[in-house]
Image (spheres, rainbow, N blue to C red):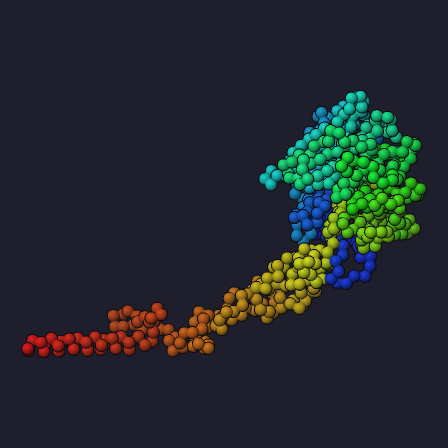
Length: 587
């Protein structure tokens, strides 16, 4: 069953769940965050285990990738093997997200269906990187081949296709490597190559590692491949990647059993990737602190412009705090409102989006909190949205609540639903080319709910109260008597007027022929024909039955008199000629 957008009553119910409000007073034309669409997979709650969003808010037909789990297969270590499908949605003008197809799932590693496809998915420029794990604890404990990663590209005619598939390296004598998590920018990606050792996974030679992937040039094109760097390897699992600053945050496990993970920054320089700044510790979640928790932490953290946000919390904390490190300063706990725990975070140039749990004092539902970024803490709460009640049925690994963001859109995967939020001026607010509308439709100087004719003054639909007597931002027929159509260029061409009911302008209207005008009389909507020439349009017929036609091609009421004058002139001329001829004969 394909995921579908909610419609009708169901949509109303979900919108009620996602009720939101600005966190401070705003004017009618101030940009705000608001819910624009909700999509769900009705047959299971595992829709949205992984999401990826275009980072550039100006991308045409903004894309989001959503992973849903078709089936689960348990293994001896109680880790579910996911048979997943990655769905592609695109945003159209007006805020509708439409399903456009799935990424083709490659055959499993070694034809074994137990491989885990789609645990990590990233949109990296013009390509999509997807991980596929392989665990040796299947098939009776036999050591199988390592994992791999896939590079997808979209062909205008053939749709999405696998352009590259690369297996992760497997050193001699080591356990198979996995290929997650993936963190990426436009030209650089880091892939976690987890050693499949027993927790806490600190056996010498078997620790998790991070491998570097690169595009061939600084300005990638769809034809250029991703290649695995044969040399660069960092100890630990990639947590997040700050592409503009060429800095990756790597997580390693503290040698002390069940201890918090250690975060180290590595920055690219002339001599390669080297540690930058002091390390710090962060709690990954409840023990044991295994590779799965680090993968989940990576999908729920954010790193941008030197700011790292981790929802794992400080080592000494008692709940999942929001842990923030700005630059190379010591990280600090950022307390969320009402003592809420942080589940997942995403960051854009201007905003930080956090999915948080119920209040520690008042309970309630999970929420989406949106903060305006600033150079220093605390950040200002911009908006909050109630995400609804907890699911009645248990969900495998419910900590996998994910959020993605850019400066115009936030996508939240939660409880089997994916909700889309949009930043912009609300319906009815003033707008211009430099002030974006949440709906994308700036019509008649206000943000409109639909395209509404695109502000064409020739039709009879408008989006302002002054023209429709309806609320601002509501597209409706223009008031009766409003001018429409093409502006008249002649005094015999009458202006068209809206009837107050139809959206279309009435047919072109002209004054009746013969109507007086400044240059005589109107004819076919033009002024300048003499009035006397059109008083009587009945054709004049000569004795032979032929009508008399004027110089303008029309019958004239004076045609009979004109014909008689012609005959008289001809007769007189003949008389003169005959008289001259008779005089010559007499000579």
